Image (cartoon, rainbow, N blue to C red):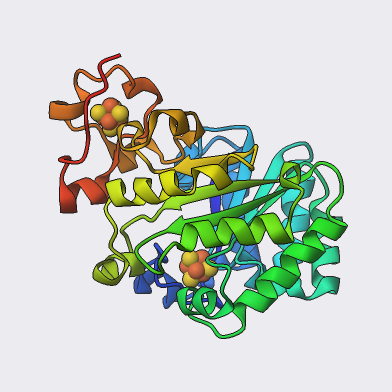
Length: 299
Ligand code: SF4
Ligand code: SF4
């Protein structure tokens, strides 16, 4: 099932957002309730090409944006998806801020039912740093309030995921954020964590100089955080080629990008024995910085 772009507007202005201005500042007519339902009905009748991402994977439906919960008919749309796909896992990618309103969160949980998953990013342990990255004062407090409520009210069968996006902002930000999670959400069996090397697209392309960190340096931060990482049974690494990771961390790496967004430069990957289970390089990263950081793994 596809990744559905529910709503193009957002109440954050993250420095590493992959959406461009054309999308986020464009009109919202094509996302209104009627259009979204028509689109899904065409998809369910077999028109797979109507969604750009994930259309061939029948296991889940992902609601994304912009910020999906800002859709003026968000609850109606959610009710429709659940009715049409009663047994499918519905994943919501949200910045979580609207769930600081407990009533709104409870309504969401009662409509989405299970199986479901809510994924919320945490940018830092430091409120000011989180707000700087999210582009909005007060975002941190709302996000933490939302996470606490979600842990309290989500029923069994509703999974919770926390995302941390790695870029060049803030010294030891990864370690600090993981420590914060351990202190504030110590039951690490109750949620997944994804550490994601940022994608260079949309606003993050415009801000690349400010955000820049090489994959190798990013992997060094992952290595420095290894003692903390080991405390999270379900922590995964996205967008890291296996060869930049220390061998004992490679089992945490996942391929989450569609094929058309990654490359395997022949000079490094051609003879590599891990090619099948490696994400390779993000296309935009390869275009800007090439493949010199990669090292063929022979055995
Ligand atoms: S990254 Fe997500 S939360 Fe941040 S501005 Fe973009 S759409 Fe909004
Ligand atoms: S050389 Fe290529 S295939 Fe091998 S681990 Fe590195 S990126 Fe992956």
